[in-house]
Image 1: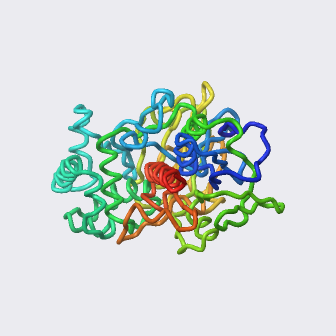
Image 2: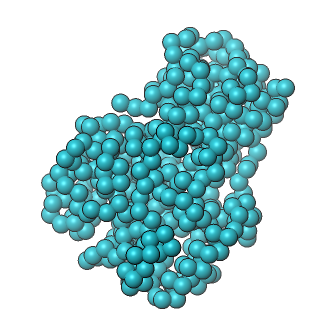
Image 3: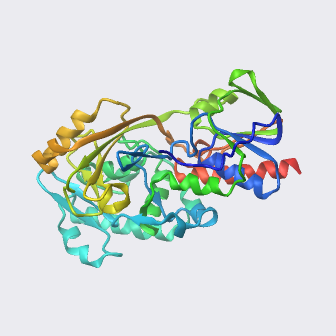
Length: 421
């Protein structure tokens, strides 16, 4: 079972005002902006469902997202494009548990959870000076505006942490598994601009998932479009000004074409500069009982890998698992390996004991393109208008995030509507 969309049964028209290639978050956001502007748009999607990289499948009663994904509620586009109450969000506890090789240390958020202050202060993830630096970092980012953070001097995340005086110990035990997991970049070579924006979102909002899985996000977007607007299982093989070529020899003519597929495919269709990828693998396990009762993400602070973080998803969102079962996910950023499960199981056995041997492997997601690589110097809001009615959008044209995909899609749809006027 996958995300549903208002595809209807209408045949693909031979022409439209706009053809949107791709029904991921950016394509759906662009289509919605065009629909609001009264433009006749057609969305063509090669796969069997909407969402692109943000989809959810039901496997043996468990909800499995395609890779470990979360929603940061501080993203501005969520408030403008979604009914958050209808998404029925389930929230992680702020902070994390850090596995030190023998036990889990709590690094909480004493501002929002004062009861975690003592345990956080005693957690051996770094020195007292490191923890004071984290506090100063929190204050600085909370006061900063996101646009200002995206204009600051740019270096790698790792260089920025060293420049701020953080010790190697806190970088390896805390920042690498936390930020490396979010950015799918264990090397921490991603732009510090992106690092600061993501960290600010973690400070100002919650980490959450919809009760019905991450696929509920594109499903809600698609629900705002009229029936028959989205055409699934429709592969695009070529794009030229005024026309989209489909597999099987079919063609659609249009005044404008919006290419809203993931970065490497967009570059291929449009002859743009290559978009490099941060890969990820993700292993899902079913268990009879949760190994811990908490709603925290668990970071591996030992550096043994390959899983940088794990989560008991059924603790966070009970709807992710059948009654009486637990769902555990282990995320391996920077790795594209469909056969990684045995290594991950060995790693989790060291954390939670022999009970891990009884867990049932549900699925491994090996994702070649998890996010576009955004090394310094990084600049968001890249060009979307290519001339002759061709437009491009996606997280590779903005920030590598759900926020970036939604914002890029919306601004692209609005730009196309203005261009057609």
